[in-house]
Length: 446
Ligand code: EPZ
Image (cartoon, rainbow, N blue to C red; front, side, top):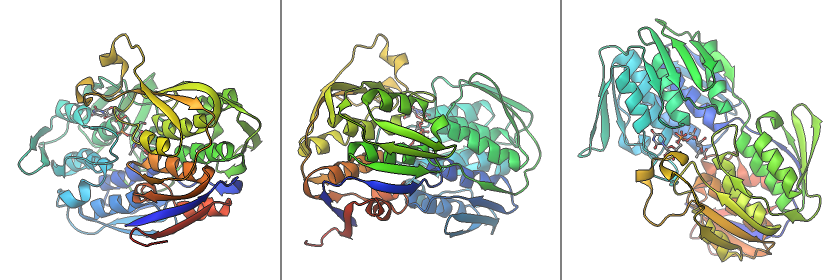
């Protein structure tokens, strides 16, 4: 286990190239299970979750080579159709193999998914959909595995009760080789889903978005291999953009995707943060003048993404006035708040008036642990100071790293493996922007 030692404050300046999107790369690796032919993925980020997902598919009969940002996946052996607990439970997305395994082999045994500690993160919506396609799926609490089987997945009409990003993708993957047509309604609109669809179409899949939040998949007998370049990571861009403004700095981002960040850019502009369109894929983000407090309410795409909520809260600690950050997608996504308060942030938990929380919130209301809050009120600006902080989830990790960069003094970050899950060469890239970060063994005395 390792920790970061960070000396702040630093104004971050320079250039960053955004890496490939974690939330596409992981699913494209799952999609490789739909064919025995070679699949080549370019622009894959060198992050821990990708290595874990490659381990998952290697347990399912694949062989993979991951060099620089290219992954080559080939068939290696027959499919055991079982994901071992110690591998699958480390990565929520491993549950998505249900679709491909059922549609190709008629069986799958997967552990109850894990992932970030940002809530219960059940897969009931995935399972309901697969059952409608003819799968029988039972959860055996004695061994902690889902046991799934089917004679042949049949196309079906499925309406998701609430938005689910990976639920949409699981059913999409299940429909491609199923018997007949599948119509999915109330599907996720995240652009990462569209990038997965483009990859699957390169493999020969017959998929189209047929209307608002609706998708039609025509089942076909076989998919062929393909080569595909993954889109850049929107969450990385927002993280570095906020880093520029919060640190009073100036960062030019390459592989930028402004057109997919409208909700963020609107909030940033309202808060007084600066950005300049250099060209179609290059954006300069910079500190302009005193920041103003701006409220945000997270929502599925095209709303203000839940993955941007934590870094936004950090930015609001530097803004003048009171801002409320209302999290509507996950039921426990404020794990970073107590850590920011250790650094001097003034943050209180609040519970906004919501007419019908059961339908308003994207998570299942019954999953909400007693006493959790769905919103925070931030009073700013505050000068953050050093602390010893612990990271609990990926985006909280990036947020706390930013906080120690802009805070004054020497800070210690524990749990940095959470950051390695989703940010490629994180300390190298922030150091190149001027940050003072050292990665050492957790028990190193310094
Ligand atoms: C995906 O998570 C992303 N992860 C998340 O990014 C992202 O925050 C989220 O979508 C929203 O865009 C990946 O793509 C690997 P959901 P996912 O299914 O699919 C509940 C990051 O930092 N729900 O849209 O898990 C669920 O618990 C990660 O990169 C059910 O109750 O999100 C959550 O509260 C974090 N039952 C809400 O719905 C289900 O069957 C939204 O979940 C499915 C979901």
